[in-house]
Length: 226
Image 1 (cartoon, rainbow, N blue to C red):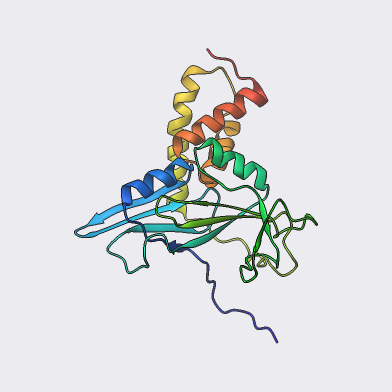
Image 2: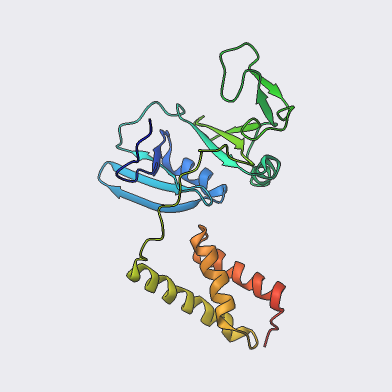
């Protein structure tokens, strides 16, 4: 028997233990992940970082009740594990070769549980790679190309936008578009706005979003310099 939940519950944050906050922050920034906060208050410091396009963030720092540094294990779902490994390598990360589990995903109960190479049957959920942060916290990449039935929540329907936040984002977009407009020829502002807003909503920072909008205009519309 199934029952409908009465409230939404989303996994928002996983807390990691690290021995050197600045070293950990530098490592995760090197991955291109978004820094959300870095706050300090007396003996407390908290840093929140979010993987690209993830709905869940990680927090580390000092002054929180957490385990021994390096005791965390987290999993990142990726659509293309080879592309994900190539990106990590390009960022200087020591990432393992692709492997699969002899007894099924995440099952380490059998001898030689991790076998080299992709899942022989090419199944979604069955191919992995791994890397560690400077403290030894483990990250698994799991290739998920198609989710099994029942593994996705049904959309709850559109929610009303936060007008204040939307206005602030539009103001930011206008400011960055102004700089672009001064150096480029005539174009439709809404094309630049759409590309910038899309990048920001997918986790890019303002400068990254500006660069993405410029590339879009250059590639699609070939807007000339003035």
